[in-house]
Amino acid sequence: MKFKLLALVVLASAVTVAACSDSTAPVTTTRLRAVHLSPDAPNVNIIVNGSQVATNVAYEASTAYYNIQSGTTRIQVQPVGTTTNAIDASPSLLANTDYTVIAANLVASIEPLLLTDNNTPPTAGNVKVRIVHGAPSAPAVDVYITVPGVDIAVASPTLTNVSFKGVSAYQSVAAGTYQIRVTPTGTKNVVIDSGDVPLTAGQIRTVIATDAPGGGEPFGAIVLDDLN
Figure 1 (tube, rainbow, N blue to C red):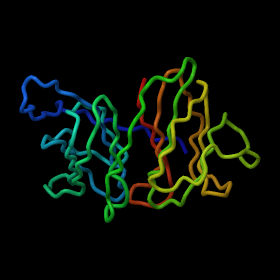
Figure 2: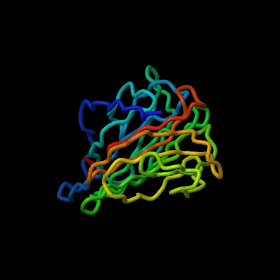
Figure 3: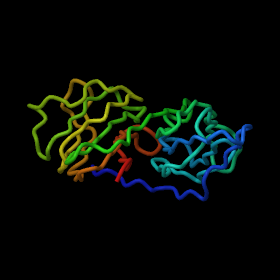
Figure 4: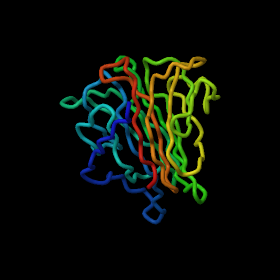
């Protein structure tokens, strides 16, 4: 199946942060984006440090990166039309660092999955690709990143035994067109097939395996544009 295009949520405004008690101290910032990947959860609002930064976020949608003050950061995810926190987390975020927070798992077990992003540009002529297992109903998987049409029956997986919430290191590959296929670990039974994916030099992408809306099969994937 072809990857679904992400609907980017337009942020109404930057996050308002509390002023430091020492007005002469430099304010250090970080960047954070959010992704709704709880397949049976309703649309949600996202609140960071008391300010609502994204509204009516649908399943498989993400926000752009937005700037916030570094340090302890309260992240709340609330179903639209309620003030009930489906997620209420307070991670400590480092200055000058990019993060992705995912509302992960089925709604009965919804939880934050915080990723540290590496948006340092790839070396000349290359791209960087990271794989995330975000499908709660899927088993552990193997991932094949190949040129299109390669017979994976005689190929070794690029990544093996990636379990739910597993996050790969960034894979640096030459720019070009690739095919990404996902199979249950130890099998050649393809459950996700990207088709042809053109990647241009300098790009960084995060590919996330997903449940179907509501949960379960057919499994799919979304692609986040981290850089370029």
